[in-house]
Length: 363
Image (cartoon, rainbow, N blue to C red; front, side):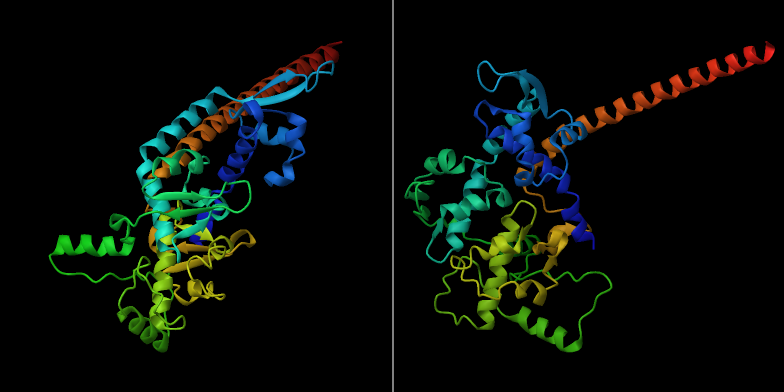
């Protein structure tokens, strides 16, 4: 399945990002090579660190130092100048998109039942939604009109609370799309989901009728107060589909692992069987099982395996890929020169052997 391939092609990027993060979290951003080797399981690295570094040059530099005074020097790793340049670019992208990041955080709180979410849960999904590592320290305090931090992160339970409702953020992607279509056509367009069935698939007559009737129901915004709705009603299901659509739309890759979504069951009023929504509404979502993990994906955001609805924060990923590809090209060129050198050496050796054989036969 092409949407499965979209997950597969990010594996190498994610692995490199995990190793880089491990080193960046060290004091002074340096680490003895043997210490990093001991963390292979945590980084989900299935080769030796030296093999990984050979395959992905340009991320780190080697140098020798002592772990303790009067001990033998050992190999250390430190971030390369290229990686330092990338980290500066990353800061720039985060700064340029600070309002977008802040609005995402507001939107998550505004969709939640009590307008409050556990800090631990937000930290757990920061990579999925593109929040910087230091968002609680450097971003949240800048917006006291929107956020209140209750408790102290890292010291017991703490929460992020919404201080004030922002009407500008209370419109979903679907509502904004309907408004834009209405503006362009001059005809009022009802907010609704785009149904995009995979090519070659079809629905039985009964299912087509069920989908048609369900689509005719009024759209329920994920930002509406639905406390009066019956949890088992069709309207509540429409609202739940709307919440998942909005959550996936706010995510970096328009996809989120189902276990991560499940952590927000209480905050967003998900039922215990919430994951069945993704298979029941297969024209809106795709459920990938790649890597043994269920991942919910937004169909309309992809063309084949390419993400067409790109988050501006993905510029960070693009910059990191450029860094990796530069190293890969250099390694490929180095290997090519080594092969050529080896070929020349073998040709010279063959010529010498030939001359030796001629001399031997003349004698």
